Length: 180
Image (tube, rainbow, N blue to C red; front, top):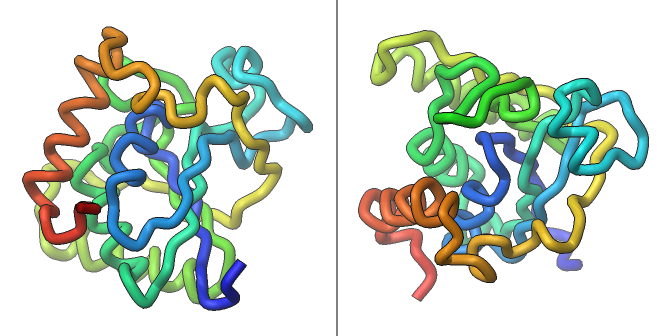
């Protein structure tokens, strides 16, 4: 891995939707669906779905900061999910769907906190931002059938109703960041 590449992990509701957006982002080199910040080791999807493991459904992004900044990644994140919705995104409810930024360094922590403070100051949201900013802990890659789910299942009902519109919103709002 190129030493200048960075990794950040984001929880924005169902990982199928978040992954579907970030695989389209220029400068994002890899997107992996997984679970983090819970208390059960080697957790499974079923355990996460129960809400009792403490994990969040997340995507781990590896990106080239020479092509896209962390700030740009966070701007996209705050447009394609609701950072004011506690423990839910749309119809998906539970702590496993909480809004979160899970950092890999103190610099990322500072950047995430500064970004959230700036967005809150701008007053673009009617409710307070509830996105947690925590160090990445107890990360587990999701089962293989979750990887690239939207790309493999574009006609699946959830993908058509939820993930597809998020991808369209990204393409409309951030056309300059879309991969060719």
